[in-house]
Length: 298
Image (cartoon, rainbow, N blue to C red; front, side, top):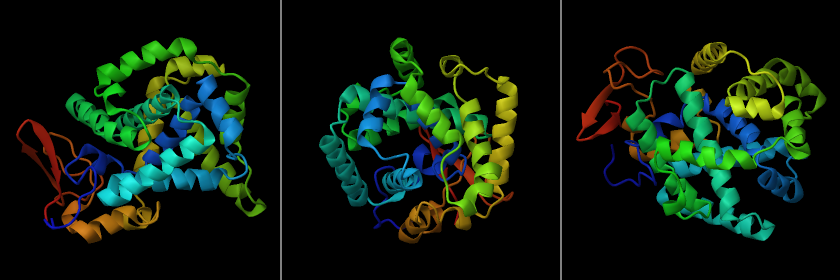
């Protein structure tokens, strides 16, 4: 690891650094959209102030670019990205802390839930560490980190508190219909039918039971969803990492160029197994103090 290089806001030893390189995060992101749409006030703000139906793919890529920048970019780049988001929120009048907190918690919950069910056996301590790390990203979008859940227990309590205010109204159903069948150029219709609809369906199926009840469609068996998530994740992971990491535009590859090859993201277990995304023998886990150290040997 190059000691003089800027590790960014999280750095290679964070849980965030390791998880956000996994391709299943794309499925988690779509799950977050389904979940976020269940807050009537939050989704109304999106409908009024956003052109997501006309520029859905651009919006998705801009969101992915923001996540990539704050996860793997320099500290200055991450702060600049956060400043741009806060400015947009102010201009559009969607900077209500309650709504920002809902969006944040829905994202974090989706990321943790999907990666765990997709074969990355995070410990409870690692989950808490990830949630705590993302109070940094909460600050970047305009929240006071002190008001943001820092553990899985606090996150669960937040959802218990907010659930009575959730509903699948007309706006949520518009988002649901859009995500299941987004408009695409004629040449991309086959890809939408073969790939996207499966991704969207899997993201929807992975929602919590109360979300299925609100949307009004029966929830598939949990074990079936977990099996499908793991199978989909393993298929995505079969794509060479350096090819996958070109989207969002090169954030992980740029971070490795900046910090050295030891910065390569790779989720580990605490049972001293090789990295899930690596061939046997490539990577190892090192415990340090009372936290998990995530490193790849040179």
